[in-house]
Image 1: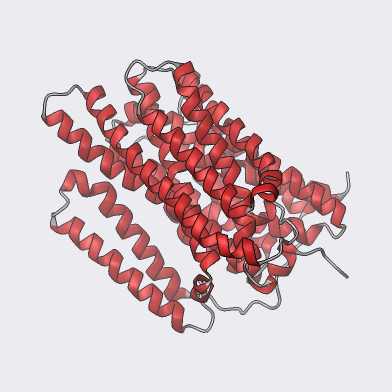
Image 2: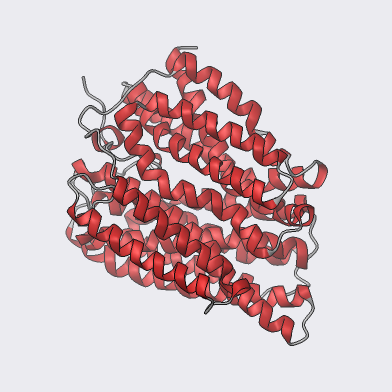
Amino acid sequence: MPRRWWTLVAVSLATFMTYLDNNVTNVAIPTIQRSLHLSIAGLEWVVSSYILVFAGLLLAGGRLADVYGRRRLFLVGLSVFTLASLGAGLAGSGSVLIGARLLQGLGAALVVPTTLAIIIATFDNVRERTTAIGAWTAIGAMALAFGPLIGGFISQHLHWGWIFFINVPVGIVTFAIAVTSVRESRDPAVERRLDVGGLVTSAIALFSLTYALIEGHDKGWTSAGVLAAFLLAAAAAAAFAVIESRTAHPMVELSLFRSRAFSGGTVTMMLWAFGIFGIYFFTSIYLQNVLHFSPTEAGLAFVPMALCMALFASLAGPVSRLLRAHQTVAIGMVIMAAGLYLVSRLGAGATFAGLMPGFGLFGAGAGLMNVPLTNAVLQSMPPERSGVASALLNASREVAGLLGITVIGAVLRSREGFAARHGSSPSVAYLDGYHSGLLVTVALVAFGAVVSYAALRRMTQQAPAGPPIPAAAAELVGPGEPELALQPASR
């Protein structure tokens, strides 16, 4: 097999691992909770720590890859991710597991921005490149679809640590293939400077906000530590905005947000991710602790949702050509909200069949709106800025996923505590809090339908429809990749 196809194998395996790790943990959460005696707040840290570092360093990882070499960063990130996975599987306490998850997030932040860029640099032939991107996208979709099932099966029949151990042999094989097949590439046009001020202030803001939201219920929302964390998050966010507006080479180009389509589309994408991450995490606990599903059964329950997402994503192109992007995205968000609402009406006696209408609608809506939203947002940008715009869109989605877990968690635990103080059993108290968290998410996702319709309407009415941007090119593109990511290669 030619060397370039081995390159595709390497980046696809790496993509599979990082995508899998974003959701394989969710179904195993109740098992981890029992094994390590963790609170709900501890569980939130297990999941959020990975997303926190991944989201905070994603843009920096893309810039470092462009400057110092994508192959080099790919191999370093893959090594960190694989070793951290080993540490996570061996963890005997919540603190060790959270530390390993932080390192996994660091590895993923170095690997993910390089994968598509390596494919683009490797495949000069447009037809081969399209095939390669399609295969890369399919591998990522498989990880998202079957991650919950894999996590459930392992946590039921093996030690939960194997959800992380499976990354070790895959990581070693991927490293061996990459060393011999991946060619070095970089972007000579990118300045060899890193926006350290922006990186530090954004990381402080994200960590402080996450800490306040997760610990607020247990420590008290008016406690000195939690209030100080909220104030630090606000101050760091303000400092970040000032730094980004004044530095010559910002990590985030704030001028992009002057575009109504970009700013509104980014808000919509964040609300979409808010719902996705929130429902996966807390619904897994609901399925196992309230409905008493086995981990495998809980994983199976998520598969139809993922399949509906994939099916309607494939139908999104024809639908958006018929209805325009703003209508398609708004309809998708409304369908998502309807699905969430149906799930919020389920009680302690729900059956597998009873879950499917809500799960199916949620997956269908999520699939229908994602691709046309991404295409519309990126087509609103000049070609030379589309790479940076796609990187920002992706980073915003990860940040929103983090907020989905922490904000819904704050609502859920506050309501759960209230119900428990009034005599409810633990399962009934959790169910009360879970319903409240879902209703907040329903309102936010429904608001996203309004935002997307208003933000994208003018653009789709005034601008002629450009050629569709491949869904894969809209995902996970590192900064500094505008021509490579979205235009055919030329020599």
